[in-house]
Length: 136
Image (cartoon, rainbow, N blue to C red):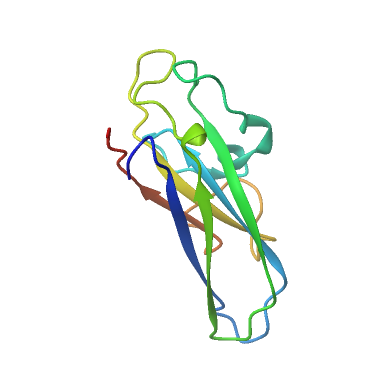
């Protein structure tokens, strides 16, 4: 994706259960790369979701947008999309001069399992993807 143009982010939600799902919210975040797996809810907190001036972004997670979804029958999928605006794209370096190495995080709420201290490996309602942002 190009830094100055923004883009669309997509997530496919699949009901792998045997009963109809609840209505839910699909929330998108951009997070600074880290060695440890992202944890919920610590790395997904709205309180950390503020945008600072370019060049003054501190490491952490930034909330991008959210989309509501209706109940899904068992085995059904739905694809949702949000627009990622250029003002919410992190700079190459954080305010301390470290590379951002951004990741997109997605959380579907309400969670259907543990809701504290879980990682992407523990919960099918969480997803992450490393991305590369190009200068145009």
